[in-house]
Length: 112
Length: 113
Image (cartoon, rainbow over all chains, first blue to last red; front, side, top):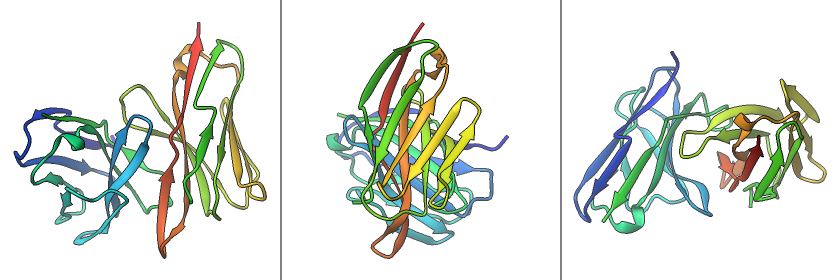
């Protein structure tokens, strides 16, 4: 089954404690991206990757890092989380930015 | 900006009625897409309409695109309670020399049984 998986689905952590949210897709897509969704602000892109070892900033990259060492995986790293990073995070993959996007189920992160 | 803006922000209708949501944008686009999101879940792609297309159908969904007015509409006919969700338009265009897909803030649709 074609899918995008994210882990964990829910995470409560404290300020400053490094965390990683994993994302994996099984559709051989070149393009992967991370979004955060906040009430009233819609979906905002954090980072994207056009292919292995090629990543670039989206609209709200501050406080986040990503890596793309393998085509299927695109982890999101928060080196020092802060309460303003409390949000619902989505990973997505596709053949390119203009194509149909396949979204993961989301990770709800709370930073206290 | 390229970002689409949906209208209305919220819509409440009775089962069996039609639901119409609109999306307006400001710059030229390659295509426009509509997505559905059930509460707190991942977005699901519904339909993609290219800039040279005017209308597209998929089941009970009908999407129109008017590039001269820079607007699109999503019509859901004979709505069901299961159609209750948020609906987002996303515009595919170029920003700062890069290909981008930018999402609007969504329309929250409630279908009452």
